[in-house]
Length: 263
Image 1: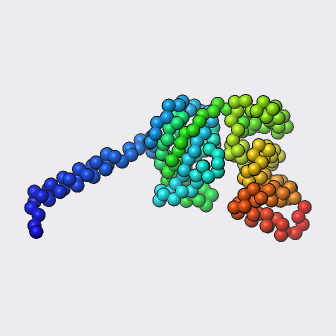
Image 2: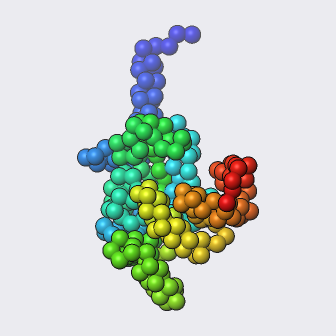
């Protein structure tokens, strides 16, 4: 059966109309001058964050092929960071500054605003474009980690510890207490070779979050770098006891226990 030319034309118009309808239904991302693409999929009614405020959010991170490389809900705690302070990748600092509390959004972040040509942690390849589905949960005025870091930098570790004791007695007032932010502060000092400061911060994190295998793992790493092998072993043992899936802690613990001259 032959199809007349006018019927072929009609089928073509129907197909074109269908494709156009699908394109109209597809999410329309906004692209910023930096190359960040974002779309708000569910609008909240909260405040827009300002630099220096603490953003509290849940997220799912994916590679361009859809592979999930991280999901905050699996850790049982939302992720928190201080906006505009370089605590996160550039795409996050820019993206969350465009949202309101309560927003659900998707960010598509080019490598230049993410982890660049180096990638990260053996999970994110070099030059990777990342997709984040985020939920902006809350906004806080101050972060305990930022406050303690300012005191350590200005007045030293002992002054920060004294301030911590006072704030803890007051249930930390309006300071937001985040395991992740304190861990990040500890690693900031660890990376700069300021071992006493790193160990102090990690110990505070263990005090606040004693049931987290991650806090003990981080403390063990700092203690080991400081030559405190016995204390490091104890920290790693506690980490494994709390989180048997922590392969890194189990590996280091096995190496330490099999080494000669353990102190």
